[in-house]
Length: 160
Image 1 (spheres, rainbow, N blue to C red):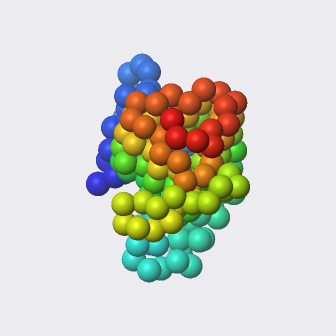
Image 2 (cartoon, rainbow, N blue to C red):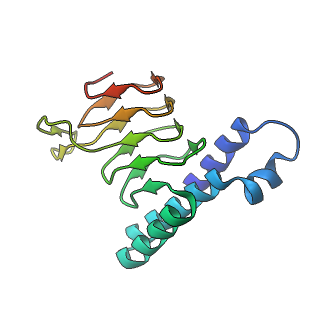
Image 3 (cartoon, rainbow, N blue to C red):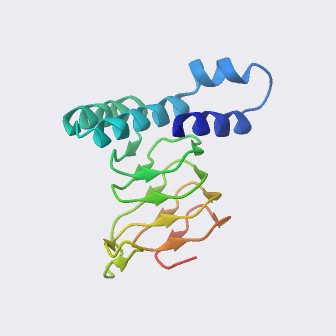
């Protein structure tokens, strides 16, 4: 399950003893990821109204806007997630670490790209082990290669 992979990834990011209790009860970033996973689960069960309610609660409580339709692999970690926006057709294929005030998705003024399924994709695809630092913006139907680090404040609109 993806939430277990997320929990393990959060454990690797935490410092000090008592990481399990600390993550489960006192880490708002992990709670935000859990709400995203829950809203995504209801979306996959074709219960979009419940998905939207949970998405909205996530926005209100944690100021994180992760669209319930995003396809984010397990191992997803938010660090200081305030102001983070992740669009509806963003895809990650492996571990993804996102810092505060990051925007993933949206258009870049270019036509979308065809993915492997022949669908036009207008939002980024992240391969495994990517890190996106604070204030970065990644837009368009681009591919972010494995092990890529996107620096703080950078705007990325072309493949990396």
